[in-house]
Length: 366
Image (cartoon, rainbow, N blue to C red; front, side, top):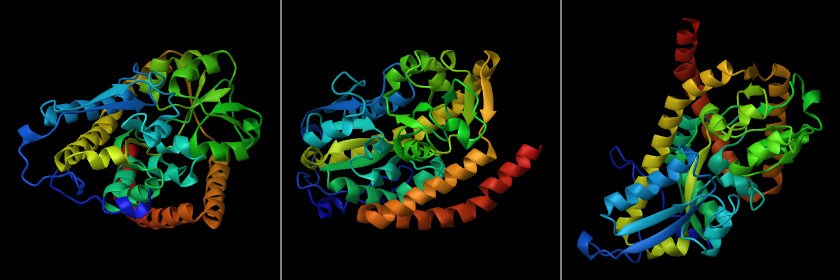
């Protein structure tokens, strides 16, 4: 599938919903909703159903699509492993095994390292900044162009906010303490850790606890206090580090097989984009509402909340940008997105140092 086929799917403002404009050969102008076909899809996800927040993002998309079409367009979500393994959602969507999936693009950096930008990269953009890049900074067009080579189109459909820095069985104070550890961490954050001497593992969420509890890994990151508590990671490790410098604003997305997308009536395309938009906003709000109390419970239960040392943060940030520059020098697709993303990031950081950081410093002094 050539990239030019979906370059027209850009995001434009449309009132409060900021809907995406799109065209489809199957759209019939003025078609009455009662004349629209009944369409049934399946959605594979990367998440265990027990996590009501992150799996809930997929459920939100499906529920809203049904509600906005009076049930004529239905999507059934499936937990990781029910249809395909949690880390093979993109493969299933690409091959047409399922029509769509809910996952994180950085799980698939082995296919193309630039896919990391669709979720998050170390020392990159927080959730608000990521949304600014996606919706008004050219990010969605960049990702659509990249995904065209896979026969897929994607839309943001969830964000966890800045994540935590992982659970460790032992205290780490310097980069030397990381060497030789086995840690579950995906994406380019995993590449950074690998260069710091960590033996990196990539596991779906439902497998993390057993691996950590049984000593197959020494450390693991997932999301944040609410989800980590649900997975029981505090029962498998004592030291809880912050911040999650490798995941400052992870976007989750709905991935759609492009042939299935093009077969939808235009009205259904608009509905699906609106549902994804709602899921994107709702998930972030839900995590912000839940994580504070969950963190208090963890600390009261004996978890040792610990900041990463300045030494670790400094070497990790330097290593991250070394990786970006190396990747950009050897991969045209990565360079195209990285150069555009970096320019937007620098501009946005300049503004946020004044408004966001300025305000945060005032209230935190109080």
